[in-house]
Length: 277
Image (cartoon, rainbow, N blue to C red):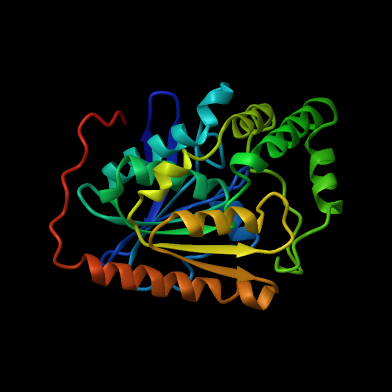
């Protein structure tokens, strides 16, 4: 697998497709490409005629990362994303598709370089702003459980917790795809982070498809509703059942190709100088 080496991490990635719009897919906290394949989470599975970049976030899956909680805050993940886009898709607008933590990463990257993004798909955006405080405490609890009881105890607690009704009913039990000795650091990094100020997102003139589901405290519909109110070119879809969720890949495909058509004929922008790979 190809790797992009950063100052404090190495990002493992893959690219499929030779022609068409450029798309990048980002996974959620403690997940990876391999874990999303295992649980059959593939928002880009119905995309054809595209070049699709997938990668493991720093510290996740096959990527490496430091033992520094601040290194896993969303702005740092956004820096990784922009550097990777400059490496794989230099000078091209890209459609970003992110789940949970991936949504947070996109919402830091896009305001930093809005010309880079042809469109955004924000899937089950996580807790932000007022709801982030309690979730940060929950991440600290997760870190302590891993340190004192082990990762199996964490997985068992997650298995026993209520699950959103729209989630896949036969979803397999999986373990975090983060090295056990690094996992508490990654949780504490998630606890430190939040979205940019609301005024920053209100000025983000990029088409956005927001995909939410009900009854998930870690990914509340309230976050998606706030983002829908703030982002000037957004569409919100809320799933209540798993059949609703199964429609999401088709919606993503329509969104990507619609935005891709809008980008045809536009001059490509210059890659931003000074990106440190």
